Length: 89
Image (cartoon, rainbow, N blue to C red):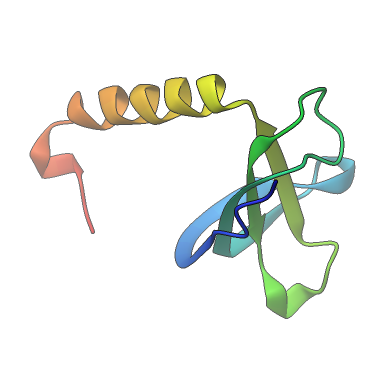
């Protein structure tokens, strides 16, 4: 069973893509579904993209639900440790 729940948002960052080249990422899509490669029945899938550069400007991540929760906690912990004056919108 699939949820078909997809969350999309605009972001500003960089990702290392094919052949080790860096590119700007402007969009993120997050969804819980069947993975393409991960050895799990369902995964949280995250796609970082720059649609203006075509389909090759994409980095995809497939995480088990447990691993995705650990990633969320690690991100929150790292951000909480940054002094307020260093954070920007």
